[in-house]
Image (cartoon, rainbow, N blue to C red):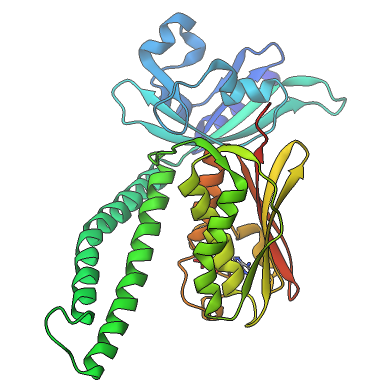
Length: 360
Ligand code: ADP
């Protein structure tokens, strides 16, 4: 009777948890499926024939579209010994709005190490998810709406500065120059926002073609040397060998320009920066090295996050949005590569990307 009382108490406790709890026993049979779980799935799985479950609900990956394969179900993964930390899945139950839940849990073992089952706790993050989607949509709409007028403004300013409407006094030319520079900053920002949005929605196109790394790097140097010249910085290309890689050339240029312009921005006037590439563990590593101010240790973890800058006031040379490296990371990964860096504060930084060598 005492054991029964304990069990009742336990079930009551589990049912009053404000999150969904599911667990299975050592044979993988579902043992707990608390009240919130039942509400979210629209059924008590324990009392339903497995072939009827899909009548009540379906499980999807975080994108809300791809069906969650059996072996990706958090409780199954935990039962097999994986430690699950914040795996996001989407539950679509009959008659309910899609619900995004964050799942965490692990195998249950007793003190002798014997496996007793597994459990997963899920919490509802649909509201957060919806807010993020709204935010992305908002950024995307605003950027699209801004792009056309900015282009028109820049065009008109350029025509005016070229005296298309007749000669202008020097003071007016000076003001036009300021207006032009600032509109260009706005244009960069809008383009970065649009790129970021496209990349995170998987909508950016990649035109993967064979390109010669030597030519690509030469182009990156000649495109970025004018910006470097403003600070008497020299970009040195250290490698000259030809390597043919399958990449989208203009996207690679975007990444190299981001690395190079950062190296320029964070070096002292008159410094040199180095662009090179080499074979490394079956990959090709392309890297940009500078001897500039480096990156503070506390910042290392966040460097590839969106809108992160060590301290916006130290971006002396021009401007930045803190989006460049986040975009570069997404581009490199979309082309099958890896991005990384190493940096010693006050001594300099190396930013690199690795791409697989084509098999001969
Ligand atoms: P942005 O340059 O537009 O601000 P990035 O995403 O390209 O954005 O860079 C984010 C931040 O990382 C920079 O603002 C800077 O603080 C730091 N950073 C990037 N590259 C370097 C570098 N080579 N040396 C020192 N700091 C760097």
